[in-house]
Length: 306
Length: 169
View 1 (spheres, rainbow over the protein chains, first blue to last red):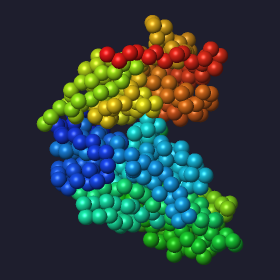
View 2: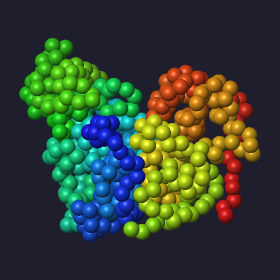
View 3: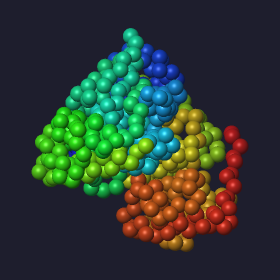
View 4: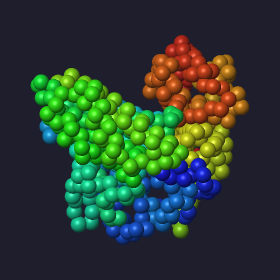
């Protein structure tokens, strides 16, 4: 689950065994935080390992202390109450995509989950890992940005809540301190007339995207857009939340023309690089097309949602 | 740097070993357990040749640390046939020519085993989607898909084979 590293990997020689490390299996979050506190920069959390293990095998990451948090049961759940959807960070991507709650009302999350890597990787990979790895090619970050999600973080000196838009700092760098753990993802509960869509353009099955777009729209009874969140995957050093979408679309009904105009403008906010997945020009063309597509799909779902 | 002790149940048989924590499950199965039916293809979690079933879910064993498998039940391709008799999934792959060189086959079989456990009658799209993490460079997939369909029919007609329970050592 790592776009940047995958690209580096295909042009470089590799080793296939991680360097030596000490291995810990805390059974509670408190234990995990204590271990992080003790080993600091030399430690790394391993949840499903589907991003971290490839990095370790290629020796891009050399970690002396691996803290395997996969056995912390208190971090594996999906709950919905009157205010929000709460997803435990250790929920696997497969569990997320097959959850009845998600299927019923959070189609945007399901669409992204079902397109992450392949079914076997989804059996191990976790929601928290997909987000906290900080890879701009990972799919859930853009979804969470579009939904105005917040991330619950625990450190030695207590917990805090970080907004998704403040979380992604740079490629593979997040707002998490070395001694902090992401334990829950909070998404505002879907309201009436809210819909979302995640459109991912990829070259082959199981691959990272050339570009992908998450759109989340709330409309009023007349079909006018009250709120809109658009975020982009794989087209910058971090996932990108559009700052223009709201200004262009709020208060209006979405037409083909308006969607196309918004797509043109939002594409200008992207910052893709030329690589294995395509040239800058190509990626922007793809992006313009799929932004429009995801806005239209999200709008349609918002109007139909009860 | 210390070794860790792992206890795993492999194809119904419990065992425990002292291993370096950096060992991957695929290497553990092949080099320590001697179960070389699990193949290593790309070693980068792309190809799926190393697929095994861990606690009921198919995973890519080249991207699982042996410590992650501690305390869990592993089923490898060696666990499919019983008393020298091929399982229905294996028979279906044989009858429908779902393999040519055979390198991807153990992974294909284990991914199919997982699929048919959770979905007794998958349609073609479901089969293709579920096998999308397993690459075959010979068959063009057509016969593999037909083999999985046929296996599903065989299981429906004749029932699943009993899981062999091996007494622990």
